[in-house]
Image (cartoon, rainbow, N blue to C red; front, side, top):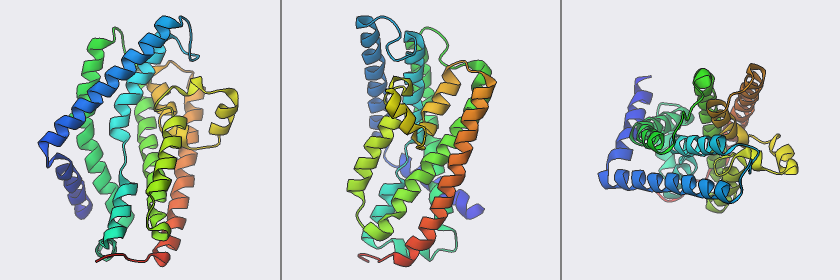
Length: 263
């Protein structure tokens, strides 16, 4: 357990090694949050009513929560694995006396925790001054935290599966770009999932993407019946189990196909 905690600390230190990079990242997130806030306010000003199936207030709450949550949910596991394979460092990683996947998760968790401290909480405070009213649905915060934790695991397993594909493909950045665009759109990170047309909504119901953003953000911002909350949490649990199983399968097959580059 100690060695995995050490990797969490490594993830924290790597993210904080350049203070200018931290400040630049924080500034970019402030600008992005402001752009989202201004864009949706302008949209509702020109089109009064429930533009997206949500009221103006609920939409702004959703967008604020999704934008802040994205700073915590960001996962660079795919890029990291791809770089390790291309440089040949993957050989050193695989011979370490620890589980490769658990090591990656520990490092990623450390990075996420420091991002939550440096970005999420300050952004939430800034958003609170800009948005007059409660951003979170207080009666559902407990369910929301459980849903966020589940979404975090789904995001990690999804990214890990794509990263492990580099064991076959060596170079995965074209695939990463395609899947990242699809993921950002269908997850509800950019726009509320309620805005999707009926056909896309039905297709998305069979994909894991909405379980990463749409479900947790809706739970923490919009009053819901308990039965629907339990259903959404059950959907997330199912995707965790499925993606974990795919991760094991991809890992067991992929490590036999790996060809070490560089070195």
